[in-house]
Length: 375
Image (cartoon, rainbow, N blue to C red; front, side):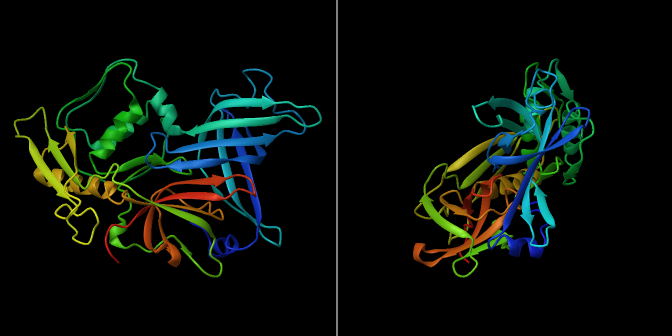
């Protein structure tokens, strides 16, 4: 889900002066819900980070009923959940908000100064951090022949038995038992399982587990949003960086396939587009990354995974940073159009990271990766 469903009215409203409406639902382990107004902070989303979503917020509790008094208080990091929202309030008074994620509260700080209500600072992370912290306490085995998606579900069910999924379907299975030792990280385990399918895995804004390939910006998808200079452009400024780090333009994948008598398989995927700056037969040269995957046992699967991994890597040599008016509808992986003539910017970009401020004065920062092929 590279972009949330937002109405045309909503997308038009955020392009002009509007009234911001933001709040945080605080949900106890027993599902008691209290709504707090957010006076500051932001949600940060980064598809390259181990924990994709983080939330830092400042709230005010004028009546003092939510200021923690002990470990049994609602605003304590012992299973409390945060669900922040941001949107607009229309002239008629109706409200339209979008969810920004499902987070587990990790840290609470209270600042009590003379002459005002205490400020409460909240720090929270999406559910992948909770999975990662629930390390294996005994050897954990995924049997040979287990469907990869089902293997992922079984690992995550240790921590969250009732998750909802938006996942691809696959017939690929484990070729040998996958054994995890005591103290191993379960989120790292499912991330590697998803990677063997060429997929990202993450928790979306509703707390669903998404297992899907990233959007291929070379497929020329319709942009989710446009920053085209002129009237109603919500872009405030931009900066560009050209770098050769990490700079990979090839993937060499070896499928070892232990546990059967099949020989190891190998696949190579290169940036083979002559118009690309990182074309492997051009002046840039060849900069491969090497991947070993024990779940792949056919040449066809190896090549499909290598091709997908390459699509995930290309484009980082031309990065763009944009700040602008806040659009809370984004998900990492969304494709946006950016046009700014004097900076020689014109094209489609994949959104790798972004922020969503929770206060009305904040602006949004986007980190974008350029479509590699000429338009």
